[in-house]
Each structure stands twice: as C-alpha cells, then as structure tokens.
Image (cartoon, rainbow, N blue to C red; front, side, top):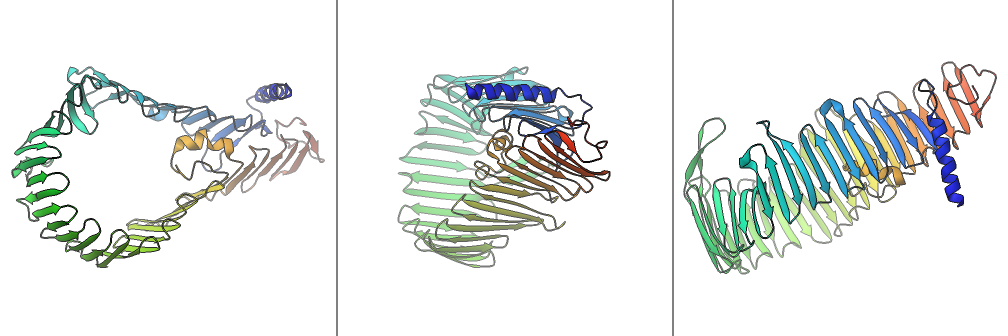
Length: 485
C-alpha cells in the first residue's frame, strides 16, 4: 500500500512538472523528471519516472520509449518508422512502402515495393505457413508445410514447389532445377549444360559442360565445367572443377585415409584426414604443415605465417591479417589491415573483456569500443564523441544492436557520461539523473536530489537554488522554470 501511494505521488508530481508552460526553461527534478539538450548530437531529451520513460528529438528523428516494454522511432524525412514490443518478442519496421511485423523469428508479416511499383504483402508463420500476395500474379505464392506449397525467393532458392514434403520437392536456383524424391535421398538435377543425379548416401554423379553467359556489360564470358562423383558419401569422392579455365582443379578423397587436391595454383595432401595435411599454395605464396590439426600447425611464406600449439599458443599472420591466441580463449588478439581500415580487437575470456580499435589510415580518425562485462561499456566514434555507461549487461554481446540500446540500456545504466570534442560539451548522469551535470564552454548546470539542489553558471554569473529557493543576491538571472523565480 505504501508503494502504491508513493507511485501515485510521483505520477502527480510528473504531471505538475510537465504542465509547465512550453516557453519555460527546462525542468530538472531527476529522476522524477528531467529534460536537457543532447551532448553528442543536436537534439533534446526528456526523462521521467527514473528509467521507465524518455522522449528524444534529434534533427528529423523522434523517439520515445517505456523501457523495457516499448519503444517507437520515427523519421518522416525518410519515411522511416520502427516499433519494439518487449524486444525481441514483437517488432515492426517500415521504410517507405516496405513494412515488416515479426514475432521472434517465427511469425512475420511483410509488405514491400519493387522497381516495377508493385507491392508485395508477405505473411510467415515459420516453419508452417508462407504466403505472398502481389498485384503481379506471377509473384503470388502459398505454402503449408509439409502438405503443399509454392515459394519464390525464399530459403536460398529462386523457386520451390513441394507436395507432402519431403517426399516431393522441386527447387530452382538460377538455371539449375533439382527434383528431390524424397529429399535429400534421391534427386535429379539439370541446367544449362548440366546433368546430375544421386541416391544419397550410396552414389551420386554430376556433369557440367563448358558454357557461356553474357555479363552486365554485354560481353560473353565462359563458364567453366565440372565433374563430380561420390560413392558411400562421405567416404569416397572424385571432383574436377574449373574445366576449360586456366586453373583446372582435381580432388580425390577416400576418407579418412587421404584427400589429394591438385591444381595449377594449389596442391594439398591430407593423410588420416583432417589431422595431417601438407599444402603448397602458389597463388598466395605459402606452404603449410598440419600435424595433428588443429593442435599443431606451421605455415611459412609471403602469404601466411602460422605457429600454433593449441591450446597453449597460436600466432598467425598474413599480408593483412594477424591473430594471437593464448590458453584457448583466455586471451585473443586479431588485427585486420585493409586500407583505409586498420582494426584491432582484444578479448579476454570471450566476452568478459572486449576491446575494439579502428583507425582510418587516410584521415587519421580513430574509434574505440571497450566493454568489461557486466561493469561498463565505453565508446568513441570517428568524430571523437565519447560515451561511458556503467553497468552494461547486454551490450558486450550485442554491441551494435540499436534495440538493446534504446529498450534495455536505460533500465540498468546507473552512470552515463558523454563528451563532445567538437562543441566541448559534456554531461554526466548518476541513477537516472538523481545527479546530473552538464557543461559547455560558457555554461555549467548541476542538479541533485530531484532538483532540491541546483547550480548554474553562465557569462552573467553564478546562481544557486536549495529546495527550489534561490540563494544569493542576484535572482534576476535564475532559470525561468525555477520555482524560486
């Protein structure tokens, strides 16, 4: 009963504070209610009831949320709209004419426009029901798994037809059509210069002639052919690829005894596969010895250098990659150098500590993201903007997930700190604005304990408020929203 009374009092106080005239200065009574300008980007934000409500405007984007239950983000300038309901339970996204409702990854309803200005309406109850309706009848499909259905551009195939799946399934990818009866044990396959069949896992064979195709520039390109054969998969197989090209490759396998691979650019021999392998890669200019893989690996050459004694130590380096591992995943370091990107990542005990540094080698700009689970997450973008959050439960696992940031971070973020090197603005917030400090080159504002203690300084002077009562001689320059004015 006491908690209910306190909640009612808090709600009434929020209503009273929110009813201030629009022209009034921002109200600072955090965590009950607070509003302030954003530090890292131009915009304004309002927060109320601790972590359970906020509203934010930045340029053309508006966002408001009741974490962790609901959030809404809109941007009319690009016809963008997004809703989260107990993310990832239910989400809605709209971009122009394209929309999508999704319940986890199982239930989805989507509509989308195409270049022909036709709108497709898609409904999915995965993996049972698939449906699409369009103004173009050729784009319509319906599928009820496992009984009967027709799909287009789903499940990594251009078309799929089935009856009592898996007893009859027909699929098409580009020009290759495959008949499965039943899937995956028996299939017939044909395409442009291609024929194949298999009775898996007993035997299978496929042949493709050398063919041609016209590319996007109108030139005719040659498409290499291939031959494939397996007996008692995966034990015996013979494969020839790149027939008609300048790098025809042959592979002969009799597992687990050996695998032989020969081509103009690469030779490889495996004995007691996959444990002992020797590779000579003439294209990438390195030689590699695995024995037994993955525990001991050595590689030497211009293209790659590896010294691995797993799980104790591993060092690998190529022209643009570097990796160091100690004691399994106790410590792992990776680096990618691909101009203009130079990216380094250091991890300790998987996600316990994760530090990512990126640099643009052309401009000299750098960015960093560091997380120590579950204590903090620190970010600095390429513009130098910095943000520190203390208590970071989900961000180390999903560092780029915007729904986590807007729906869950406000609930457990006990401390937030931001710095903008361009405007020289900074802000700090403790316990959902119970203490808040915001500074700019010529101004400073501090609020503490529901606004009972406030301090503000600007070129006109310094001003104090204690229990909403101005303290000092000059009261004319106090904020208009202060109760003591």
